[in-house]
Image (cartoon, rainbow, N blue to C red; front, side):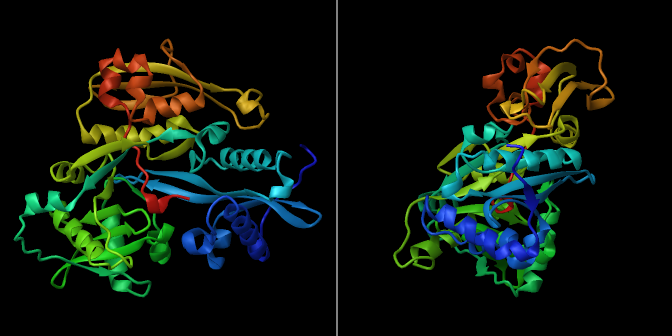
Length: 411
């Protein structure tokens, strides 16, 4: 496929890129309007914030893949830079020519050259595992119904909270929402100027939570899926009162022409210990799933801040474990990419704290490819998949690392 010329789109390509993506994705599901669904990425004025890879045929764009900057921030100032892959589209008349493969490899090669430590995306699992992506991270989904609220708060309860729909021009409220997001223990970087477009991704509704004139928090509700994809409050023990308000709004036809009954799903991540405690005492049921699909390009760089955060969260057993991660360029997904990972790493904890090191003479106890290594370190099901974890008290105390990805930050 060396004759293929891959270009990076410029602002003048915007209309053609969006038209192609809308056309391709609308063929396999209901009509799609990318700027309406994900304004944070696909508004005209944001087009050049990411990298859009394109292939032309006779001057016409027939394949496109976007790579968008992402940053995970930690409370001690550490930050991980990544790129999210989105809008992967090939014109139906031009498929089976290897265009998607070439665009994905180009994007991954650029990430490696630019020192990017991770990438993420959504889509069909096995198709993207071909490129090193796999499910990882932990996402808790709590199911809460009106009966849970009645028995927890009382049928004759008085709810002193109220919620207000947030609009794009509610600058003061958006400032308060942004400030509350900024004090999370681990968070995705959110550009304040884009904040409303970020929070309203996937056609979500953004609500602020108030007690009188006092701002108490916010929540993001998705009417299409009947879930609260994110809720953040100054006093998280009052989460039941906030959920009560959304359940009442649904029942009173606020979001739809007919009342919506039944449970509502509320998402939380492994770092949100107070929220997990509050919801576990309220919800009818809870399920655990992966957070998103990730590819890690630099395992030491990506794992280090999560290890430090894990040490802050809980007690870790003393011990060490050395392992190899190896993907040769020639073998990498059989597509001969320049992208190569070869790391020998040592996880270690002792009196001087915990560390991950690439300078070790210890014998490696495990050989992993990159997909396996992501699961080993970050999957909530890692202890089921790797006997080495079940046989090692140190690994049991430290894995999986608490990776989470909130819905509105997805691509």
